[in-house]
Amino acid sequence: MIATLRHLSPDARLLFATRFIRLFAYGALSVVLVLYLVGLGLSESDTGLLLTATLLGDTLVSLYLTTQADRLGRRRMLIAGAALMVGAGIAFAFTRQMWMLVVAGTIGVVSPSGQEVGPFLSIEQAALAQVVPGRARTDVFAWYTLTGAVATALGALAAGFATSALQASWAPVDSYRVVVVAYALIGVALAAIFSAASPAVEAGISSTPAGDRPIVARLSGIHRSRRVVLKLAALFSLDSFGGGFVVQSFAAYWFYLRFGVDPRTLGTLFFAANVFAGLSALVASRLAHRIGLVNTMVVTHLPSNVLLMLIPLMPTLPLASLMLLLRFSISQMDVPTRQSYTMAVVAPDERAAASGITGVARTTGAALSPLFAGLLFARPSLVDVPFYIAGTLKIAYDLLLFFAFRSLEPPEEGAAIAPSGR
Image: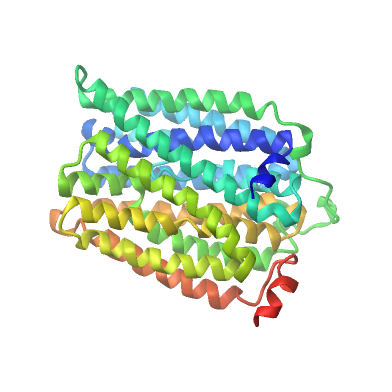
């Protein structure tokens, strides 16, 4: 798998760099965001409402940018996304008004979970699938996932240590604001790097001219792959709806409420968790070559959801941390396989749109649940409930995915997997 990295094109290396920089910012923000908003005077319920509005806004912005990226230009849409990231960071840093925060979060790009939001992932996936050979796609996505996980981990660690150090002489909320300002500055850097990508990342010419497609196809960016994309989108939204109950910001806040964990310890904990998640992506790639992409998604995701439900049952911080780390060590193994599978089963000229629509479905699902999670966190007796809801919904997703897609194999996989009895 190391050889895969050595043969990456300059554009692929650039996309790896933007992934690292962006996820570093997301990881840093996720550790302090809820603490920052509560420090500004928002209640837990208001914070949940704001995060829901933020993710719903990301959904609408991403839907437009990703479905039009192949037509208007992938680089142009990526730069636009970076600009929205800058605007949201500046607004969050310099206002306390709830309505202004809602507007900024809705229009801009903010990640409360430490995971991808906005148009970036979908467009980058499409570009990567175009500039790497099909046989190397899953391996490349595994390294791409690892890159993001390590960056998220380092961002969480940096934010935890930086805010703890600043709090020796600053008010806590001011130390958190430094992270928010840094988030905006990283958006500026991303825009500059995206502008350096070559025309090779742009979409090729479609076999079906845009003028010959139905109006729905022209607006959505998909035509031949519509049925598959819509089924995947529905399932991914269910998975993310479950995961949205325990986004990283709320998970960090749960550890703070239950065990009084300080920001530096939170940063260290989520650094380790995200590193484990990233390393698991490499294992997922190897496993997928043996048992197939769909099987890998399901058999690794099921036990991780059981571990998620065990976290609030642990009586001490070490045991709860252990469950979290065990969960992260396998919970993201479905990410590179899911990305590779989506790119494999749709037409090449529909990849950005397909990735965008499924990504938007995930964001929509994740956007709704923080509202309910915030209400649960506002009641001390119910702070454990989000973990149980999340685990149950995500297990349902695993089972539905398996039965819906076990017979639809990627083109390069069918012949290799057939001898094993599938």
